[in-house]
Length: 451
Image (tube, rainbow, N blue to C red; front, side, top):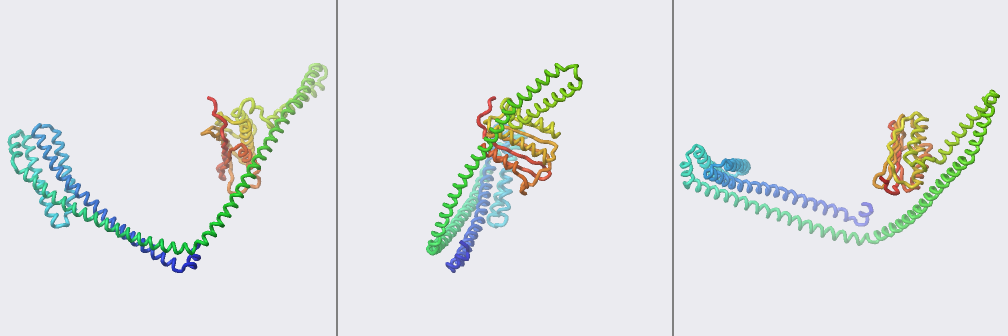
């Protein structure tokens, strides 16, 4: 439904919706900005509180390290003392900039720094005396109440600052809750108003919506019916394609057997007869021997042609040697005839007989097309099994073509794709002008290959 239809059916709907949207955005953004600022302030207050606590803890750790060193003389207590000094310095680095702009806390911070420095000076002096071998003087200094009084004042001033920051922290949290509550109430009111407008609008739109849903239902039903018809016809066409390929291969196999059995027997018999005649005429009729030798050569050529025709019709190596050996023979013969280098990476795979024949025919058609059109120097043929599927790739470094342009004669590629799809697989063709062509075949593997 477009905006014009909505405006025609309810002229006030669009302005009211715009006002409600702007108000909601304004309230939401205002609450967000206020809450973000308060949260940043709370994060700073939390850091300040942590620094105050770290300062007090650092002074206590420095005093503990001092006393442990005075009692035992062990150097590890001086390491504790050194770590405490670093903690105190880090705390003052955080606290000084924070309190630099507030007069009251600034004075408290100055007093706290002075008392801390006095306390640290006392601790350093006792450690110096002990290291100088004057342990009695160091202990006397520790036993005075100066250090205790300073520590009490440090705790008192730190507690004042902590109490102040705790109060500020509580106020900040209260402000955030207040902002969130205001935003919550405002959004709830605007939402209620929007829902009321939606209800009023839906009352006007219900009839049209029902009509649209009915139309969509009818269109979906028609689409589903068409998909069923298309699926059935696709299945029929696939089955017909499989049947046609099966019939053609069966006819080729029958013709190959007939050529092998009948024509092979005739040619072999004629060759034997010629051999017997040549043995009887040896040395008696040179001209007849010359014609007889020519006849034997002709018979040999006929037998070789018969073998090539039989192999083209039905490769015997596929049944006797397997798919890998058959593809290697095909690649070797193609390389010898065309002068194109063929690089094979073929791994054994488990396929049905029909699927093996499909792969052989597709590879055969692919390299035939390469010899006709590609003007390639190298061809790569790869076959491997991965995750229950057989991957076969034929790639060349020829001229390639633009796959987005419909070629004038693509019957070879279409036939290859139908062959693969008839066996439950799929085929993709990738090519770029000047960068060669790649044909990739995927077929389901029938069973795992025995090791």
